Structures are given as C-alpha cells and as structure tokens.
Length: 249
Image 1 (cartoon, one colour):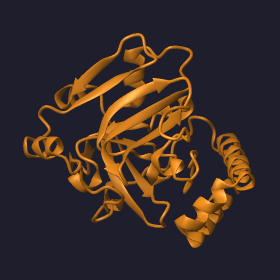
Image 2 (cartoon, rainbow, N blue to C red; image 1 turned 120 degrees about the vertical axis):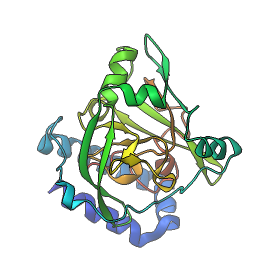
Image 3 (cartoon, rainbow, N blue to C red; image 1 turned 45 degrees about the horizontal axis):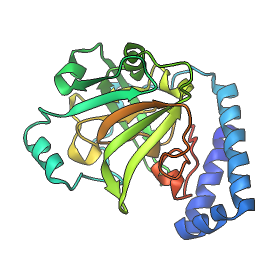
Image 4 (cartoon, rainbow, N blue to C red; image 1 turned 180 degrees about the vertical axis):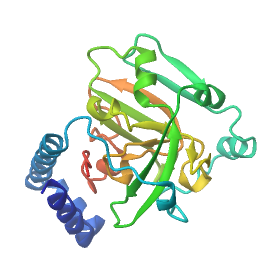
C-alpha cells in the first residue's frame, strides 16, 4: 500500500511539472502537506518492509542490456577530465564529519576492502527502470572504521558534479546508511562505472528511488542535522522542492 501511495504521489508531481511543484511547495500549506506525507511514508515503509529487509536481487541474465545515464552525465571541470583520462588514479574519497577517526581512501584502497556485489533494479522517479550489478564496499564498513559519534543522525554524500550552479549532494538517515545493501559502488556489471553513470564512485541506496543514489562521490560526512547544508532539505532536488527527502520503494 505504501508503494502504491508513493507512486501515485510521484505521478501527480510529474504531471504538475517542476514549476507547479515549486509553487505548491513554497506555500506554508503545501510544504506542511509534503512534510506530513513524507513522514507518513517513511514510517509506513519502515513498518511494512522492516528496517533491514533487503531489496529484491536478480540473476545475471536479468541485467538490462544498457543502463541509462540520467541527471548529470559528466563533471565539466578540468580536474575531473584529468582524473577521467588517468583512470581516477588520484581520486580520493573522504570520510569525516562527526566521527572519531576521519580518513580518506584511494580507488585502490576501496578495491582492497571486502566487497558486496548485488544485482538490483534502479527505479527512476521519471518512470524508467534498469537492472544492473553493482559492486563495492558496504557503507557501514566505512562508518565503523571512522567510528561515527553518537550525536550523528544523518550521512551526507558530497559530489563533484553541479547542476544549475549548485553542488549536488544527498543524504540518508542511519537506518539506510547501515543497511547491508547500501554500498559505495565502483563497478557496474563487472566493469568500472561509466562516466554517464557517475564514475568513479556512486552510492547505491537500494531501497530508495534513483535520485538518492549520489554520483561522482567525493566525500561522506556524518552530521547531527541537515540544517545549513544546501537549503536544509537533505538533497539537491529536495532543496528545489521537486521531490521528498525520503524516497523509499
């Protein structure tokens, strides 16, 4: 039932268009309605699915022949172009914020960690889906190594790409951060993630819609509150008022 209500809400938002959604969300009444719907959906989804229940996984033969790129298809900076040409040999992922032991990892460091491979379906808010095999270390392993402080309530994902002059970012709460299928992916279908799909690193938040799966990942940050990050709504598209922060499926 939660999934049906969620899809109905998303269909309505798509039909209204981004401009209409922004107008509704900018009103006090509209924002209150969106917030109430999001709180209801998150509670219902967690109650029905369970906090650690796995998203469906598929067989290798179920993988889609192509995996569409969406949103940012590259990062248009000299630094990213140089990294892309060099196979991301100097790319680093920082883990910090409210942690006891901040650190950073190279791509070789990430590859040397225990890996999880999962074949899952990516559901885009725009209505398309694709099945792909993603491989990378579990986010929980990185957070355990960093020793997240008790006052941290959210994990923020910082990205190299920008849209409309703003840096892209996303966030999840600790339930999704520690979910076993939440991974820092560096392979898609056994190969390095293509540029259009977020090379060299992207998040996989398998129980949420595609806009939560941040691409071109540069940093992971533990925070107590989302206030003061972007417009304080927890993500790039959420700040624009287009989509809700919690996008469970």
